[in-house]
Image 1 (cartoon, rainbow, N blue to C red):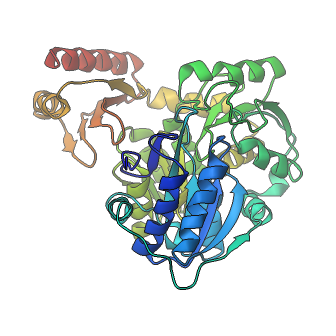
Image 2: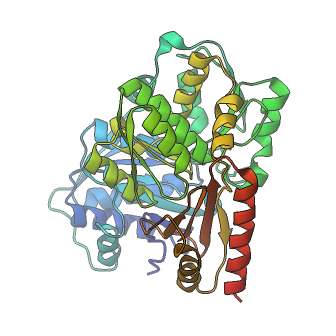
Length: 450
């Protein structure tokens, strides 16, 4: 039995050789035996294999004695929402997010939508899968559960409807599931939505939805410019991440969105804690302090961010990878709440998105994340730290190594999910310095990799 689909945070693999209905059924049984869950939410994305895998997973859950509440075709965040909102024992989303179209996977949570990762149950589930199973004395039952209405009401609770005014917004679901939610929200908002690749289609006729890839951005950018829209939004397939384009069709780095959302949220709450990752920090620190909040650094990755948010009771958490987390959303990530908050800010300020972002880019220009395949990542990271750390103002190891000087800083870390090293560089208002230091570091990494 191939268990290679079990990863650090979730399951992902090719269908049918790495993930198939037979394995999915056993995963359902193992999930119940390891967690003891009695009531489990199950949802699935638009991939062609998803309904069959979700059905087999549900059969396994029920055979092990759990009641399954099926919410059907949805986004990952609806599984998070339903698990928390309806006080279930756990939830499983069948999705492979932005992986190739012949892949599928699962994201698992426990009570209160707490993530189940390799360090708190996922490896136990993996290890239980190959062992023999017996059926529970009492089989679980299956019940369809309609969650869209309660979920839409919850989303609308984040914004003040009274300040909203008509805006033209381009929305690109990438033929994933986000369009179904936009159609529901549309009835409650004064916005005109220009819809791109809107219909859910697991054949992915326009490519797998992953807006972080530059080649996938033009479809949104061009429609924004052609229609004079206020902004563009694009999602990945299970829409737990959203990506922004300003009114000129320019793609906005996720780092600057974290600062904008932190500021917007703290204006509402009148203070509170904000969790951020260590890759790029100065813009976020500046905005959070100015808004009366407290910024707290956490290791990159959703399981780490969510736990730190709970520990600190933080109102918001953001990663530059376009994951945004909200206390009132069970500390989970949502791809819908962020764009609603940005749209609200545009209505309140009367400013174009470009001007809100330009001021921050000028204050803290950043390289964006640069990935390099390195033969011996620990050796290279250690050598870079030794070369630069001696003269630094501060060196930290929250995630990889962050090295800070008066007027520039960088973070170098190994990916949690891919065999690459990731570099981020930023400066205080000096774009030439940021670019020079980026080039210098890349050259040094290349030399060390020889």
